[in-house]
Image 1 (cartoon, rainbow over the protein chains, first blue to last red):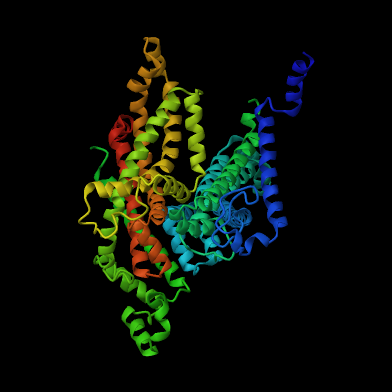
Image 2 (cartoon, rainbow over the protein chains, first blue to last red):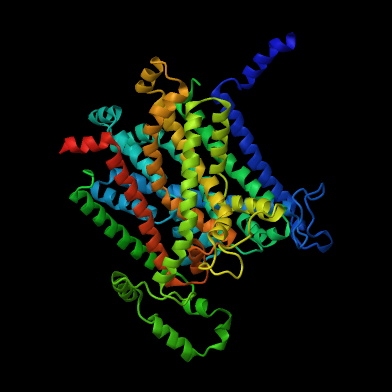
Length: 287
Length: 331
């Protein structure tokens, strides 16, 4: 009886009864996962990356949870390192993309009609070709390599967020509290800092986090197609494209497990972004 | 057909010209920035075996000795006359390569487009009608998970399960080995199409299902639905007789507007299944430095995306009575 009575109190103290509390927990778990991944990559060492012929082509077992490849390299080590590399590339590209989108979105909304027309045409231009074709073009222009992949992903992902920021600022400019503030003689800089930034900042942060999944998936896809990144530095795209040559002979674990861990990682970024939205959005405080 | 007025056509044609000229300028600039030497890319391993004179002859024949702006003008002039140049890796005019490859890809894209559209729509309506039910939860979980799934990995999984373990489907290509596309029977073609189309459809379902679900929930909470409920109509009846009609149009237009993603997906799927379509040609052109083909495909894909958006626009104007009558009244 006493445990039953205490359970709801415990649940309440842990904060899992309301939406925000749950979101906090989810957020913490996601961050813990990413931290574990980074620590694992740092402490693993390069032992698993060297060739080890006696242990080649092993199916997943206790000693090698992800199996080994045709050179006897430990797939778990390669997957963790590859994930970190893919995460790094995605992070870098998404950050660059979000800075570009913030700059262009703000310019477009504040610098008058002509700038706005130029920026919106630029957005239409980037969206005019299929995303992947643009990625291939840019990566070709950079001559392939890791830099090519990063630049390609960075210059092609800013359009959506730029549109969101532009629309948000345009809306804020017409908001009553901004109009009143202007009539009261506040400087544009003061209005931007006190009235606009608190609205834009959460949108921007969440937009940035929700860019990661796209950036990571696209950089993995581009690498998978054979653009950039050498086989010596494994990234998930490379692992998967290598596995394609061995999948017809039955080595399923080479493809399934690295891909699955990429899926989980990308999904967790998505969950992270959405939890953050629940926590920061005032509209959901009562759920 | 009132929505398609003369001014609408002019505006769209102007838009198309603007977009295509911007895309070609951007694409040409990018390609000429590339440090990849087209001659080396063309010759490959035999690079050491040709003399400087031969190299000079190739450079002259391709006009690579002239500055980039001049080359762009020549290329653009040829494009306006319908000549996209000669593909280096296929040794055929680019237009022929694109035409042939696109027909092969069209089978794949069309079947994936239809399948994902129909399946996604049905799932979306089911989820939206029974909001909060186990079916809705499953469909939502599926769609959100699929949204973070790399499509090429999905293809690899299907390949490992159905082709390698079960041996039900072929491992690669569009036709059995040794059979040319013209001789292949319809069944053989379909057999090779199943897995790539399934890969694209499984991924494509997510977006359309989530979108349709939202719209169905709105429709089920609308006043006309409430009125139908008050008259004693069942949930399924309201969904079938009232909600579906209102939800169908946005779903169809969304499907047309996402042709760009379909194209990108087919590039990855064709790579996994070695399906000799336009997507595979894009990758080969990018990796082996076939500049004319890459430019041609870029232009073609921009046209493809534009057509999809145009159809979406027209459908909205023609099929939706609210917008149609609205524009008529505005006149």
